[in-house]
Each structure stands twice: as C-alpha cells, then as structure tokens.
Image (cartoon, rainbow, N blue to C red; front, side, top):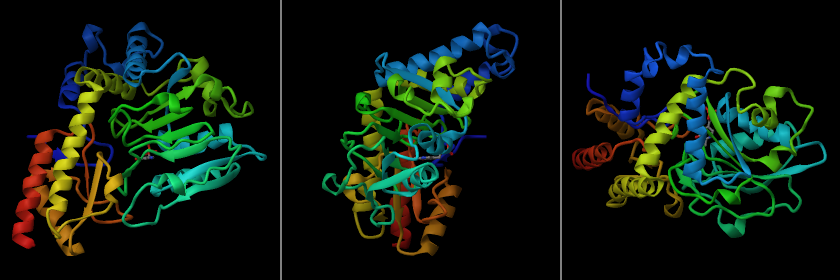
Length: 358
Ligand SMILES: *Cc1c(COP(=O)(O)O)cnc(C)c1O
C-alpha cells in the first residue's frame, strides 16, 4: 500500500526515513536483541538515546548551559496547568496573550491558580491574527507572560516574537524547530511532540534553570520542573519510545539544517497561499501578515463545496484537510516532515477543483 499525503494537524506526518529506520530497528534495536520499548530506561543503550535527543535539541536551538531540556508526559495540555502551578500564586499575576483557541485554553487553566491579565485578546476575530505590538498591554511585575507562537487551529503565527519585561513563556507545539528563533528571549518554551518532533506521548520543555528554581516547592514531584532537572527527566519511567522517535526526527532535522527547513517551509506555504490569492474562490482565514507557514487555513464559497473538496481530495490521496471541528473550513498542516511534492499535489488539485466548481 502506498502512503498518502497526510495533512493532519497532529499527530502528523513523520519523515519517511525516520519511520523506515525505526522499522528496521523495531524488533532488534542495533543488534541488542530487543526493541527500544522493551529496554530498561536506566540501561546504557536507552540512556544513549535520550542523551542524543537532548543533545540534538540543544544543538538545533543553540542552547547555552543556562537552559535545561526536559521530557514530560501529559502533552502541551499538562503544561497549560504546570506553568501556573509552578509560577503563579495567590499574590502574583501573569500576562496571557489570547489570539486563538490554544492561548485561550492556556489562560483558562492559569485562572485556576492565580490572576490572569489578558495582554491582548483577539481569539475570536476573523480574519485570525496575532496582536499588533501597540495592542499589547503588559502588566508591570507579572510573574511571566505567556504566548502561543502558532495558533494551530486558526492558522495565525507570530512572525516576530513580542518583547516584555516579564519572563516570556511560549507554547510552540505547532511550530517548534520550523524556523530559527532567539531562544535567549524566552524563559521557557514547550511543545507537544506530535506535530513537529515525533509521535504523541511526550512534551518537550526547554527552561532556564534559574527560572525553574522559582517554582512552587510544595507541589507533587511529578508536577515540579526541578524534579525533571534533578533526575534528567528520569524521576519515573519516561515515554521511551516517543523520545527515541524524537531523537531520530531531530537527527533528521540536523542533517537537513534548520535554515534549510525554514526556507522550505516558507516556500511550501507560499505555494498554497498563491493559489488562495489568485482569485475569489478561496479565501484565506488568517490576516496576511500573520499567515502560518505550518497550518494553512482557508474557506470555499459554501460549506457544501468544502465538504466536496475534502472528499475529492481524499480520493486523490490528499488526506486530513478538513478544518478543526470548532471552526470548519479547510486546513492544510504542512509541518517540517510534510513533503514538497505533497504541497504541489494539493496546489494542482486546488486549481483543478476551482476550474470545475468555481
Ligand atoms: C496541539 C496543540 C496543543 C495540545 O497539545 P497536546 O499535546 O494534545 O496536549 C497545545 N497547543 C498548541 C499550539 C497545539 O497545536
């Protein structure tokens, strides 16, 4: 059976080479006589895998020794809660930017633990976008400021990260390592792995050591960042296979190069946006200045046409194009591993569909 072009928003397509390498090693990893899933997480074979995963992330992000690389279960959604649990108290407050569904969800969790100020709120606007710099109302003295670098559902992405005096925390679940960033501008970055890093089951957390140490010490072990730092993300059994896959994906990315993947990501997205902008049949969902390179969202003239578009696309081997159930429309998720040929196939399908139905 041949593979389809998988536009799923997450879990999402992985590099074929990575899948093939994992397949070759599945039953008998590097001649060790067992699979990665069956190994002790404290044995030297698995430890080498997790060490490589960390080293790859360090190299790709250009991390100094001020930062720690952690692997935590519970996805990005647990980070929505863990961040305020650690850094927000009864007498402190935090700034949140709500520019879409995920930012709003993060803010909602934080309100369980302390006061949340909305530095900007444009989560309900269409066309979707990120706030303009002069709309951002930061609160002096905030314990931290939280942003979502790419709103996966709406397809809006920060092109330039905002600047605030507070420690900046970013949910980068859907655009981590899709472009070079200045990591020193952040106190913490987190991302569920299943969009740009590997399979589901692990979240990557990159955090400044001195910031982690400010965390609430009265929390259970599994909810404190310092526990993961002190134990090399092995306080308990880590999600070994997910981290193994992340090590292969980040190795693949290192070989590709971050600058090169960024250029390719921009080019891929531009091919689809060019068709959207070529007439009035397709309408982009996000404001042009904030269009995501990872999740390209658009509408057709009617919902009936959108349904037919998805159906016919699927028959042509272009799967997973249906927009998120909360907003409808079409969403093409084209993360790092999504092939250029798949974007070209979508572009010709779009042109042909418009000719037939426009
Ligand atoms: C997918 C996604 C999440 C949720 O991730 P889980 O790992 O499923 O909890 C959070 N934030 C953003 C930006 C996402 O794209």
